Length: 324
Image (cartoon, rainbow, N blue to C red; front, side, top):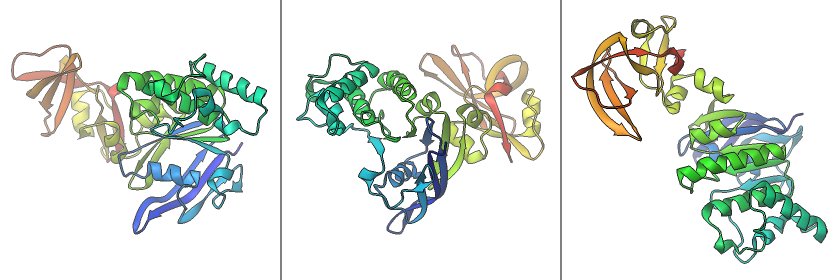
């Protein structure tokens, strides 16, 4: 059970190092998501695995066999992109069956029907691609990428062009399709919610390096560095002594407590701090307060509060302890 292994991968564009010595393993049937800001190297790493970009150093192996010099079409990997890249001159079934040209016609039709059911589009085989909505087109693109039963599926921000509600729905469709087919997948996204909902493990990249790769719950509860915690949305970072005064958070003197989006809560048993600002956001009010060390933190409440101060405490469940 070896699956994909990447060792010391380096991808360059001229003098620019896009991927800088990354190690990565994806076990058979596992879904690994790569997170990072634009320019972090996540898509370049995906393209290096696919063979679309040559490795300047390192190697890519599948089940122990080096495929670094193997042409893209011979690696047995599938790809799904942001725009789907469907063929407009073909019907839905023509697109899905495109990679099945070696199979007998009866088997090809059965596989297309199976995949249309899998992505929730039975009966759409004769439709023209131009008649599909954005979400339907991406479902067809997913079905097409799964049709040849790739040993590894590489997905490069496949839902980023869709609106949030549709993305949230299709993440479920995508996850169910990948798991029901036992597909090994490497998924690139900038959306943390997508990654945490879909993947067995999530990696955070920055400046071409892999900062941390862990199960979603472990990554969230125990970010390895301040850089990872900040990327995940933790802010501010306060000393252990201050954290202890604000709530029951245990940390060593050489550690920092990172306050998450729900880490600071109003409480009559807390510490009174001055209010800096209040603003509405999606059905709640965000209250910025100034902590005793001068940093600003945010508490979330149901409605605006009167006065110039707020009594708050730290919820340990909404915080993480990281190295100082």
